[in-house]
Length: 192
Length: 192
Image 1 (cartoon, each protein chain N blue to C red):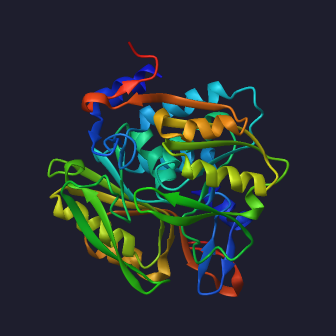
Image 2: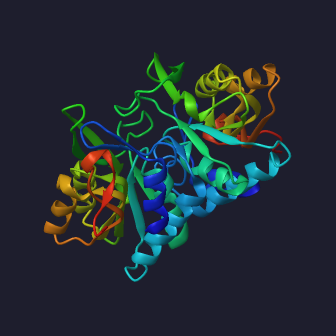
């Protein structure tokens, strides 16, 4: 997605440890018009998949996912990182390993919001090692739902998450695919 | 907002301790069309306030706020509950007391995303005791920004948050105002 790649080049900061900081339009301050464009692009890519639910993870996945769900006209479910006090009902749980903090965290989705009749599009802001996606795939599988594919706003293709998704036989669409940060610059897959 | 009140009556669950659970369309599973209606209503209410930023708090504030920001055509900033590893720059910090967990948590906003030239609309999903709003008001004040008002998707008027906001001289708009949960039912302010 050209618009997104240009925005990453313009406003992204490459930090040590292959970290891309794009918190001026996605992770902290959010550009709503860009989120709508992103949501519409996901909806276009998966328009023939009869999606019934968009599944994402709090917090940074919510803004792009609600726009995709809006365009697809289906509900969005966001997995919670902590079980809220009002969440006393049966839940699906999955572990998500955090590479930055070197710990396993749990994510959860209340059982009544995902079922075996659902066709789920899993979306997230970043796919790097793919840990959050692995957790969401597990949750969708526990529900017996069909996963129609996985979408990332940004994928760091060299960190293994994209490969893991494809190895599961799942369709994977990233709107911006980063090949490397060589020389402290963002290089996209397929770029000259 | 009639549409929202009807939805709360239809899908909300009243739990012990004056807790309203509306996680089938707002806090966990999210109805994107309703979020757009809510965002448009906030935009309509504050249309003459020359808003430059919408400020909310992760995670449940994001969906309604991104729709308000989309309609107002301004950026949204969501306060983080944990300082992310990529957030090394100067931040505004505020305490938020959690009544359910009886602890103070910090929220933070990177300084470059709020300044004294901003006119800020603070939005959140729920205003009960108003603790998250107090934290966001503090952050906007630390930035020297003008707060044009506070909006809540749902206010529990009897728990003090609404009063606190008005006592600060701030405009407060709640799209659904709950007066009580007498008899385990939701009663809105002004309802027969």
